[in-house]
Length: 331
Image 1: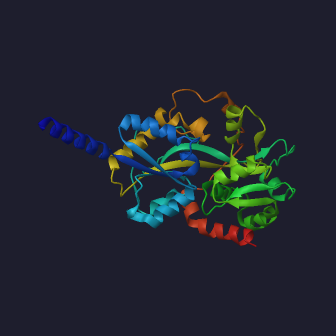
Image 2: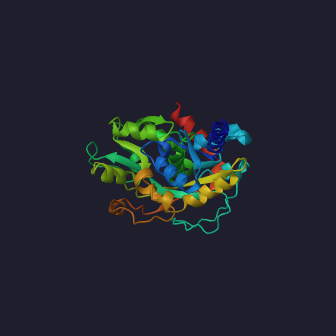
Image 3: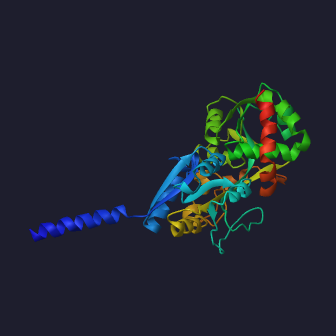
């Protein structure tokens, strides 16, 4: 009887230990957490190291993640937010919901200098118009050619209110056209097949043949070249230059697992995370990888010029620039 009692108590203790296992909740965008994205591999890699559980919560896109966090405020279940970008950092920081990462020795590899003490980069790429070579023999060679081109050749865009690529394209348009951006949007509007909430929906419509062009990244053709051994989908090089996106993650100040959150951010800059970025998230890694990038990354479009607003400039003008876009696109 004592043996049975001992075994019963041991089982309860063991079950309690399993239940007590720390869980790290990470808010991210849907393509990162998807089965084909880097999320599952990053999860397995970090769980093996931390002896914890990683729970990725998929939210449509980067701007939508920030919007949700604002609504949840200190009551959020998130420990880490992964999927904001350089354009949203000032606005995100102003919420007071994020904690400094405390990482001083991250070996970052970026095309610009980086010194932020809250937001830590994990990948980057320039935005690009991806076109279907079977449907377009002569793609636009500039943003102006896209804006003023044949309206029968459509493009799928993303909503700047919910999507970081959508916001990136809005900033690209503004950086090139300035005060004439409203006029440029009006000229482009007939070419826009639809505006989707996030990147996944837009790219899915494109690959299904709904339109010959889509807003994505200079790195997107690498997926088709490597995973599909196909050169069908290519990035158009624009004479004015391309807008840069740097994706970032940050620890949430109200996290119940603050040390685990910081440990994840430190892990994020190393090979256990970064190895899964080039051929799962199809972006350039911002940290150290254990091996060189596939040769196909050397065949991608290299922008002649990098376009970039500071995060402060975006925060000060985002609402006004979105209203300008909305005023044209909603007519």
